[in-house]
Amino acid sequence: MPWWGTYILISIGLLLIGVVLAIWDKIKRKKRIKTLWNNQKTLNRPKGNHIKYNQYFDYLQINNKHYIDDITWNDLDLHRMFTKLNYNFTTVGEEYMYASLRNIPNHTVNELLIKKITNDQHFRESVSFILADLGRSTNNNASRFAFRHKSDEQYNPWMIIVSLLPFLSLFSFYFGISVGIFTVILAISIVMSLSMRFKSKSELLYDDIFYAVKIIDTASDLLNLKESHLDTKPPNIRSIKFLSYLMLSDDNNETNFALQIINALKMLFMTDYHIYHYALRILRKNQASYTEYYQVVGQYDLSYSVGMYRRTLPYYTLPEIGPFHTEEIYHPLLTHPVANDYTHNRGILLTGSNASGKSTFMKTIALNIVLAQAINTTTSEVFRYQPGHVLTSMNLEDSLAKGDSYFIAEIKSIKRIIRAIEHLPVTYIFIDEILRGTNTKERISSATAILNHINSNKNTTLFAATHDIELTELLKDTFDFYYFREHLTENNNIEFDYTIRKGITTTSNAIELMRIYDYPEHIYQDAKSTLATLKKLNT
Figure (spheres, rainbow, N blue to C red):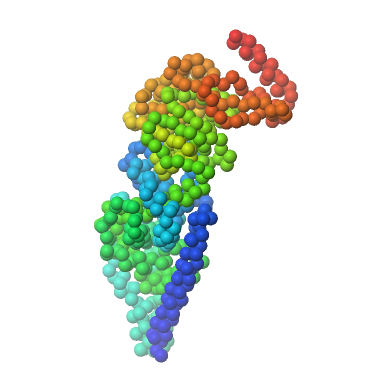
């Protein structure tokens, strides 16, 4: 057999080995996927602070003014909420979920699709297999093609000849074995060098394009399932469909030997260079259609995740539209949450001792409003509300890290709230320990003015918490008052029941907490004595 025949046979053999191993890997993955739902597990979810999920959202927010801002996101610990919700199979699902939790308009779930996924095992597994085939591409930015994307790279037709050099070099064996071997090695070296140079230069966009092609293929497969429950039917991008069969290398799984073989063969003939430029041109021409495909995958993956998340909850309910009222509402991120009932009539001011539950209650309400709008799910038995924009001013650590004093950080945070309620149709405002960074007299005076101003907006639902009991007297005509309390145990320790009550607190625990945490006895006694003196002066 001639040298070129052996060369071709080796290439075919390696390709067949790669295909067989890829099929075997797919069979094993399918077996594992079938166990995920009952075990409430995810499939190979990467971990680490280096992973970003905000690429799609970053594009969306350019043309959307109404979404959960960074302060509210951090106050409500929504990153942890995202992690708890994340049963997605794909990067698209994760980015779509992130945008949903940011309350970007028109990025919620399809309840019929969730029901179908939850109740129909065959349908659920079919969806899971399709999504798992797309998989994750960490920190991928394939969402860029749903928006205007510019690239200065131009296709060079001469690269077609360069790609054929390994084949053309086989003819050099007619001039002798030594010449043939040298020419083949030289041709392979040139092509591999150019392939690696191209991959190094265009790696990020290269991976994004290949993932985008797979997204189109995945969305098509999902829409071909019976009873998909999605109304959208994006135009078929036929000119890009065949590329999906060449996307096996886009896995980033270095332990998958099959994919490594296929990837090496593709580099040998600069296949990815030509696919890259062809796909980029097609994606630019079909931006609107690609956006629909992207959102189809996002909807399916998010619906699967929400269905799975609901299975992990002790109970939940779907939100209803009406005056604000909730029963047995609890915080979804706490291991042992305490449920509460609440009906909103007008702005409320919460009082209570340190660690009694004021902040947790406000976060519970705020977080459930976000979840209601994002995933049509609340951790309660009854939840009625009017959809609206959530803004908080509760924990300003990020602002402090940027160099602001606490008071300046508070002033800026509350100013953004005052501006927002002027143009947003419905708002939910949550303020914890307003203006704690300044002296008592100015704090109470300023807090009274600010809270009255915010509460006067008829489209605003205001929740505020304070240690300044003086505010209850100043705001008694316009606010309702609720409180949390504690009690001393037989062992002379403080316990909380974290239950909300109508009225104003009559207790405080700051000094008792010093005793419980073993402060020197003379500090504890001096504090009690000074407090008694202050109370006499105020009577």
